[in-house]
Length: 101
Image 1: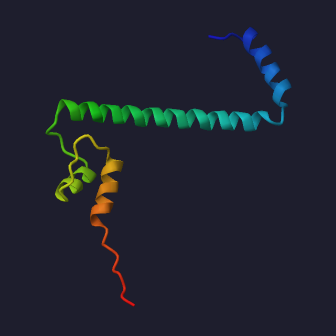
Image 2: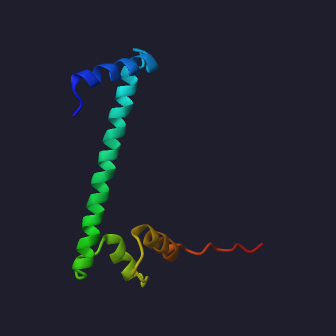
Image 3: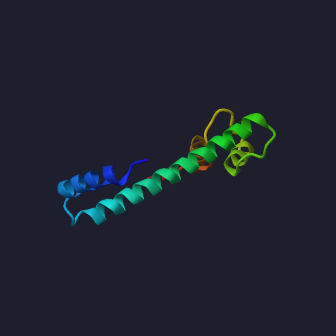
């Protein structure tokens, strides 16, 4: 941990570099960056746990996207939900009618 003796010179250098008027803006942006990082970290940990669970238990319920793709006859093995969504969209698109002149 940093003590008061280390923090005071660090704070003084920051004030000299950025100016006192920029410190609140800098603190806000640092706070939002840390918040976004923690949010992304939690999301990736959740995805990793779900992936590990799906590998450990192959009979686990599938996502709605996987279920829909399977009903449309699309092979779901090894594909992400985004890839499956693209294939579902292609499978459900209606062909454009060609108008005769």
